[in-house]
Amino acid sequence: MLGPLLRFLSACGAVWPSPPAPGAAAASGDASANSEGRDGLLWWRDLARCHAGDVSVAVAQANQVLEDQCRLESTPPLGTVVGVFDGHAGTDAARFACDHLFPNLREASSGPQGVTVEAIREAFLATEEGFVALVSRMWEAQPEIATVGTCCLVGVVHHRTLFVANLGDSRAVLGRKVGRTGQIAAEQLSSEHNASEEAVRNELMAQHPDDPQIVAVKHGVWRVKGIIQVSRSIDGLWEHLSNQEAVEIVHNHQQAGSARRLIKAALQEAARKREMRYSDLTKIDKKVRRHFHDDITVIVLFINYDLLVKGAAQEQSLSIRCALDY
Image (cartoon, rainbow, N blue to C red; front, top):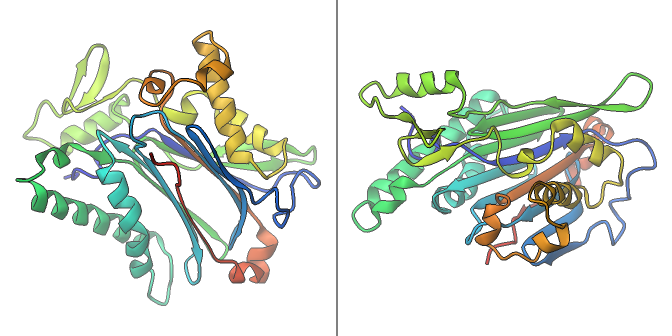
């Protein structure tokens, strides 16, 4: 039976492309490439070096309180671990998952085999159980905590293996070259768990046989237990960009600023759909902005296979936590 942390559906995304064509990437040691900044409701870290290669991160806020949480830890012996957590009906579950899933993964992977599929599964389960215990402790004083939830999208580059784990309506996409023409192709690495899909509704009903109203249609869209409304496959970045569009944007520009560039492209599309200018959209304040787009979190990871093979990247330690929260 799914607990409060994992049964809600998500609206966040992450892109995992391979390195672009030679000459397209900015050097990660360049001062401008490593810039971090904030502009209104947008925060970014344009480029930083990690065990797996280079990473670009950006977050755009739309809700009154930012419900997205993201985190990157790159230290031995795990390698590079990335997490994106989208809260629903509040930030409590997303913050809890962001705080606890990484330590749980570190503990589950402490054995001689390191990171494995089973270790990742154990970390997710331990995080779930921890949040359920928190809800039980706070029930009388804060009963509304039982109504919040989050998605969990986690990627791990351990030695020369990429692991992707997803619970909720999230998406991880790999971009890689095909053939000798240098063209880039998008490969989706995760599947979305969305109540708009019949298979997902059947799964939910099978897990809750005593609750015939676990999923129901209201105002033409599917809802889970009357708490969360789902009308599209993805909210956030993927509501406005296709997989192929995203990897081509990354591939056709320098590495530095990739995440910020993707968010800008999504916001430009959101503005176009509402027949307004991008500059006017950026002037709209949080909460009201939610009528135009959701919170958007993007992490672009450029995997450097040479570094992974040589083990040279093991000296690069990095910790990033979403810095847009006000």
